[in-house]
Length: 233
Length: 233
Figure (spheres, rainbow over the protein chains, first blue to last red):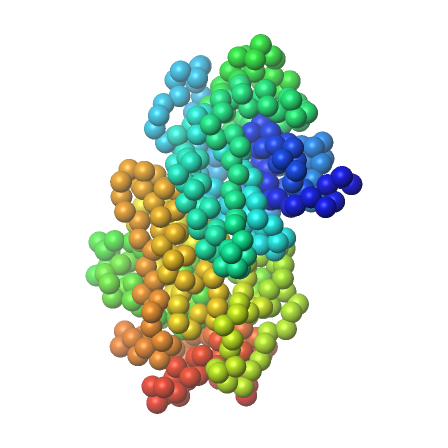
């Protein structure tokens, strides 16, 4: 990290998945000193919190903070509640509707915490790995949502009031999963450390059939690569 | 609550202070069935969480949820950290700058949770008691901030995507503390149940000298009323 000691700071939302690992690598490559922020939010796939630690260590961060929040008390998503995660046999079956894996308010809560930490750190940049193409139909993964959050951040903070410009960076927003993987490999991401599955087995093996697994596997296949993580099916 | 069983739901941010108690009463008077949301966020003045329970019970709510979040880990505000709460002898000494009692990102985090709960409840209305006049210089209490959050909420949610209109209600935004007290008394608020002090004594007595106490006391004085709560000084 020595070469980054004088670099500007950025808060990076890091789930431990493929997209956020790539985003962390992008933040570093764009000259920022990353402060990684991960949430333990009652998700079914808490395995990803361990993945986030491996990714943060592998890519290098100034600090990695894991925040405990409980979204289960607000209920009703397949990622935090008792609904079953949908399983499919191919990407073509993923519909355009908002799926049951959507967690109401999740990205807004995550970005709000990131904004809080950014203000305390005195930094003007927040990175997150949302994606508008393979976004599984979540409303809070769209460019217009991010633009609205950036506008809010500008008005919410002391630094914004004082005229500094806050930027929400979503470097993957218009890339396909295959392009994200290409980018990450160029930047040295070890995808074997990441996890994407919404419903992994107890030993961490990915199910291979949820939307996240299907999109991820197709991304590797389109690059003529084999995904380095283990799948149960 | 029987007369409200068919009323539309609204999430109301309830701190246990004078402003939020009044806001809860306004939400009821405007025909909503209130779902009160309170945060235990590592604040120095956790006494207000008990006040929020008394206020919710007194005014009547469909549900009252107290959410534990830890803003102390992001540090550096006099309300959550080790800095001293400023004490003054009069309202005239309150400056225009952002004071040390400002908690970075607090209202954004609170509103993000409210948005999450609103979406789960299927409701389109969120009330909060922010005030642009006696707002002590916090950036996230300004009308333009609230307008930006309303725009964000519209884009963040399933109901917004489906065309329903989400509204952030800040009924106190342009009222003086004296006008807020008048309004609350008309609506039956028992201000003896509320607390406003940033730095209360162990027995809950208000310090009388922090910005919140000074503004509150002046509000009662301007109405030729005595504040029903206990003060240490």
